[in-house]
Amino acid sequence: EDKVVQSPLSLVVHEGDTVTLNCSYEVTNFRSLLWYKQEKKAPTFLFMLTSSGIEKKSGRLSSILDKKELSSILNITATQTGDSAIYLCAGQNNAGNMLTFGGGTRLMVKP
Amino acid sequence: DAGVTQSPTHLIKTRGQQVTLRCSPKSGHDTVSWYQQALGQGPQFIFQYYEEEERQRGNFPDRFSGHQFPNYSSELNVNALLLGDSALYLCASSQSGQPTSGFYVVGYTFGSGTRLTVV
Image 1: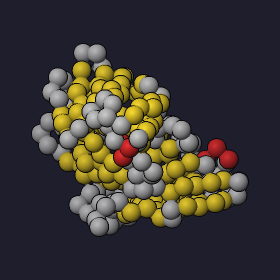
Image 2 (image 1 turned 90 degrees about the vertical axis):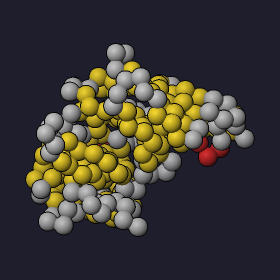
Image 3 (image 1 turned 180 degrees about the horizontal axis):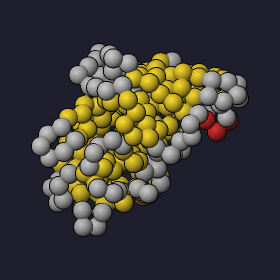
Image 4 (image 1 turned 30 degrees about the horizontal axis):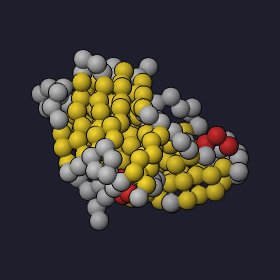
């Protein structure tokens, strides 16, 4: 059975700090790893990673995939209170029929 | 806005009742997936519909059923509701294709969900 584990479960930081969120996966016929940000209800897409070792960046957020270690990290630099949310990672299989989500990391950024 | 639309936003039902949730996919998307997100947990895959058929199903009982219409919109039905069915139900739309390298689904976009409370 496919499995995705995220750590830490929760994190409290102050504005300006840098955070690293971790995701490990065991997905049969793995195709890609996706990161989402969930503030209230709808998870919003951040990154999709397919190739190992290639960093994807969007502003202060960046992410990279390590297919040898079956893991990914999401970095957020110079955190802001607006970054407070649950961050979800999900593994997608080759057919793309389903996403297997981790339990999420709850990030709280204090002013 | 041509995003994913779900209705209703909130719903309260009594144990044993039946419920129908609705989803309209993002414009240009032809595939609809449903997820259940219990409080404090990540979303769990229920099933996916493509070309009006259930293409894959997660580990959910037969009380959970669905339908996809010719316009790609979808319904999720849950019968004989249990207290444990209380959750946020998320719909995700995407686009399926069949390149030479194999069948694929891309562009997962989530709706805002339906919060179901069973009392």
